[in-house]
Image 1 (tube, rainbow, N blue to C red):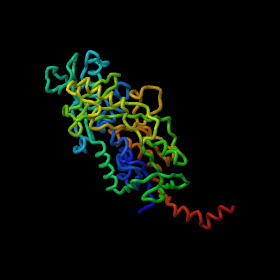
Image 2 (cartoon, helix red, strand yellow):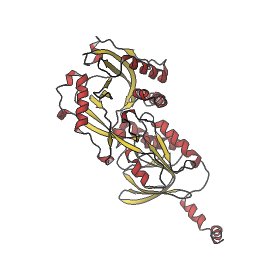
Image 3 (cartoon, rainbow, N blue to C red):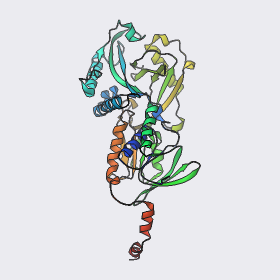
Image 4 (cartoon, rainbow, N blue to C red):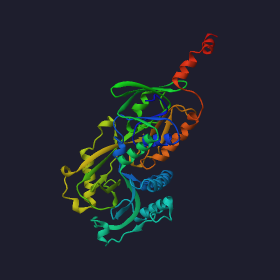
Length: 402
């Protein structure tokens, strides 16, 4: 087993998987440390969507939406077994906070960013008397229903496949393994980690922190640390109910104006998500009773047939954590752009990836590779054995005595 790598990636969620895949594809030697299991955290607790993020248009994040739609197109073409298009329906009611004209405007812009001439980019209005198409949707005060297309995936399966690609191309995965400490020297990064019941050491030229909600904890173990902006963890809960409502996804407005998805999942129906600040141990995040009740109320509001359901009848419920820039504004409206931070902008050795979306994991990985390439492409023998030998050479000893 090697103890020398070009890059160590900490974390085997979708961001770490993507970075490892991109680095190995570029010909670099890569190791991955994962403390639990592949896709253990947020990467198995998302809304399972590969999408541009229609709602991000509302907060002006046009470049993010465009990037995600471009990545969606690649994933549909290259991973058809894991990513597939699904019709999305947006109902507009008399009480809706977003009027029909605003929905149409957003969908028109979304279609333009996706590629207006693609048949799957266009949207249309659904006939309100087409009861089969509406799949039991509440028709009281219903003014319009719009249909467009986006994509769905199995987030954990996608992450596992990306990790498998990286390991097939030469990356080494240590799992479960936990980082003890990392120290930057003149030539390399010395990394101590715990694996298979013992303390081990490896050396690399750079470390990439893709540990998601554990990003600040991981960064605290690095010397020097990457310069992180103030961050906040935001919990998002999903619930699953034992009913199959449709083979399409409904994009509805909750009682507080938040957008919530009601979607098919594993033969049942998944509803999510919520957003609340979280300050505890990331490994202990869990749905609250209030969040589960909120999502169930939203489901019942739009689908009358589900109204007999009780909280005790949920098939499943889980919570994941997003890493967002700290702000006093509502989490719903904050930027979802990936933040790539480092210890030294000119010659980064410690790089940290904060935030990031499932859909754009490849774009994030490309940015990390671009940031590291000047360092990794320098032709030098940086190995600890060579460094120690050079340090103990007669020439070096003479220099020390001058």
